[in-house]
Image 1 (cartoon, rainbow, N blue to C red):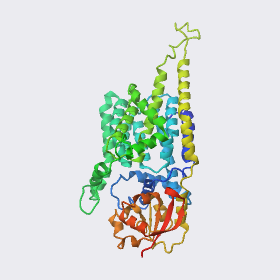
Image 2: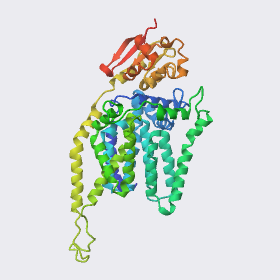
Image 3: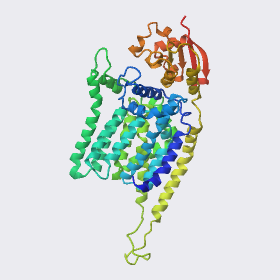
Image 4: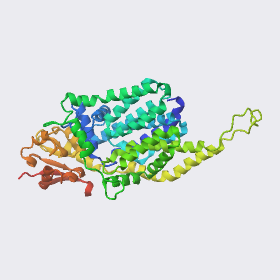
Length: 510
């Protein structure tokens, strides 16, 4: 990055990070996945791949990276709930992704103001602000996808850049496997970014980097004897089969009442401007050759999200946001550049020496300023309200209170007491002194993990306390042991009220 680029990058980066860090522990309400990934990162720091039996639900590289960035907030901010520490650890990931959007914009041929505009859209979009705060593997995957695109579009076209693009994309897939759908897009980008004379070598380098890096995961499973399904053990291929075809689908995004429809409605409610404007820009951007990689990425991700019957996770949209921002800013610049602008160079103000009229850049300048003003008028009020709510809201006091109860309330010998929590509070309970794994039990494992059920010979009667969160109450009808615990639990403390409350239930085994 050139020194002149910092003039554009620095203020946008500061604004984006401020929007993410202010109120980071108060909003949004914790997702159980956040606690799960943070607990798995904790397990990595203690020499294991997961805090329970690792069943190949996702490649482990995502929470390995989380382990690398989360230890510092853990050391420096010991009094905060663990999910807040984990969210703070995600800030460097968000910062790097913001800068990479600018870099990719420049390598797609955007001028500095347009690349900075794409970065600004990505920085201040309410969807990006909220999702970047949360502890999702997708944030790591998107970071490495952007790294791979930056290498594939390298203006120097070195072979090692294209090999590095393959390695980076393999790291992205090993961080969250769902980004693998972008492989065709990256190949088109590499074709466009490579020199015709050396294109064969570029693709060979990319393929080598991708395959050799990606092989570590199946090789690990093979060496563990867990590549193929079999009796008495987990397997990579068995889990992959479940992930691709065994999970309950989210339904059609066009059918009211389905999970997919609700997800799309939620995304559009939070930021309709970038989603609709970026999607429309992506369709038009196919007419501009240099913007086709970003436009194709939007198209592929949209087709996958809109497929009927597939499973659509809540955080999926984070993969599309940088490409939506790039296509929106890139198409706006292309439209401005299509206007009459600067005439051929002149030797003097009168234009006599060049034989033509003087330069007249004002139509493009005026159009660019008008586009900025129009975008601000349309998006700023809604974005301001959404980002203001993210900064000022305080939805998570109940989790802070529950974490404090786990740390401070005397319950006897914590090495013997057994408590059930959701994924978010599991690590707080561990740090409060409860025994990991079987002393503090993640609710999902009560009936799902044989290593846990073997330690409960009397079933629900072997549990002393349940920390009843919205996540637990939502699962009690699907987990028999959890349902029994609720039936025999007596509240001894309650934090908050309504559906978002947290109850501490003491289990009466009589």
